Length: 413
Image: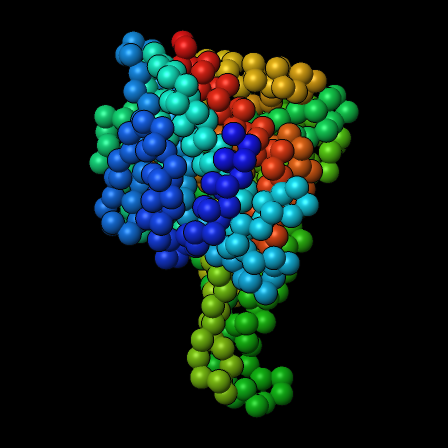
């Protein structure tokens, strides 16, 4: 299985599915070529033939719970000049497979595909259906072809349990190693910050107020702002591990505070005129229960006074799944077998995942979990969406074993 997983991952990474434009059909074809000879059913659920979602089934006898492994086939764009290797070559070096999407999230796509194909070849018949759902357009989500379209076009799929992307790094703490389990996600909100200036002659020293300078001052205040910690019930167990691992502390800070990050900055006008207006789009990841009024009040506190306006969008509340479920116990039993010193700690995801759509549309219990037993967490957290993204081959094999164990446990229920 190890060699087959490596080969399949290298093929998927070499398939450039940068979004935009996506072109996920290439990746779907590679997966179909691998999965169909195992006897698995493969169906494309597509609004745009160039950007299909792929549904793969191992049919069950009926009467037992159904399980889906959820992944996405698109990746964020990569600037080749920032990488030490070609980002779409699937280079194997230093015990790792390098390339865009290696961690986010073609490794998990491959692990689930190899696991299900292996079970099918072995003749395993689950009590409920085991499925793979690989969607398009997760990274941008504006084309209307990915998970939102899938759940509308395939309402009968409705898995009881879903394993998607999210947590799974192994953190070494004073209380022993832990893996996080994403049982949900924080909310999100988009805000426009608009700074005002006054048109004038750009050649004049000490001329009229420039909106670009004002916007820069405001963003510098936002960077220095120390957000207030907000403890929610979903994080109580995780907070007991604070202070014992630098990277874990960064994750905790991302989950226990509202995080506001400027993502798009714009200003325009004649090249010889002082800028009258400059804007910044601010992405907010907000803890459960925060309202748009709360967001505006906190941002005004962070920015202070000045000639600016704020337009706060609607807060998109994150969804959560219960813990103490058969799926959580299946993951715990895998760790007890393969990493017995480690504990599984439920938390929230600090970034968006399509698990939210499946919770809301299907009522599925959906967790984010990709276990990385061997890689230092800092490598994943700094290279995912960045340069030199890579996954250790040992971790890829560990993920295949995890998917096999989880599928057998739920499939035998």
